[in-house]
Image 1: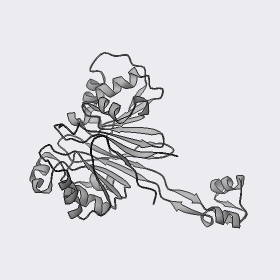
Image 2: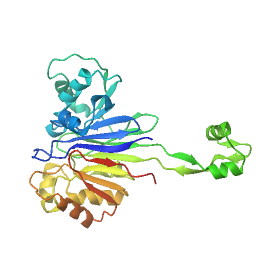
Image 3: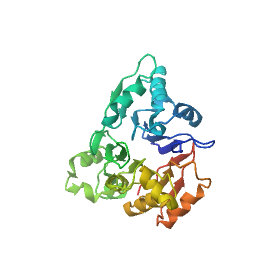
Image 4: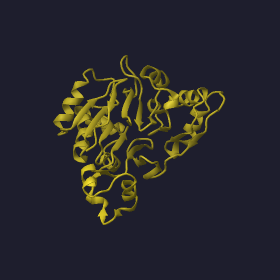
Length: 301
């Protein structure tokens, strides 16, 4: 059975704490692994979480502030040290190419793995696989930043009872799926729509069009909530969101499971982020992220 879950490697913002590492998030999606924003210490957090370099197929960096990218050097070198047997693709803002190059070649090592660089320069689709389309949208931060979204194509779920009633069995089921009609029976008569799942990842940003585009209809939204609502001015000045802003955007977008993360070290009570998220009107499933937790995507609609 396919596994779709978020493995949280780090949840701190600019400054790590005793209990929160710098950022790092692995999305397991049907046998592929997408690593988002590997901050400093990500390689060790992977070890603690049971994540291997072989699990990585993509690395997606939202922007080149250190707490979101300083772990790149170690992760890339570990991929090569372990001789990962498949290509790995890296996405990051094109304007930060010089930062990526410096991190990739920060020290001497032997390159054994094909690392494909696919920088992001505009909103829209970045890549397509059999199980998802990867998209990026520009965010609002002092340096260029992009959020990412996985969109699974809609499909149809076959209904065995209706197939049997119409005498369609064995290989004919596949023919009906491919051709859309068989012996006068249409595909929509013996199946139902299975909406594709959506996962969105939003880091450092103010509220902007990109936040809303990424969150729209997401089954799971992982989003920064660096500040509490009473520090709204501070959040806006530094290009961040508050818990209430993040949750309000999630509520308007119809998000099913909201994961708040990227917390400032100034706060001692993580529960307050959850209270403010509920006060902002979010009624879906809510997780206040902690290092090394695993969060499964919601079951299909």
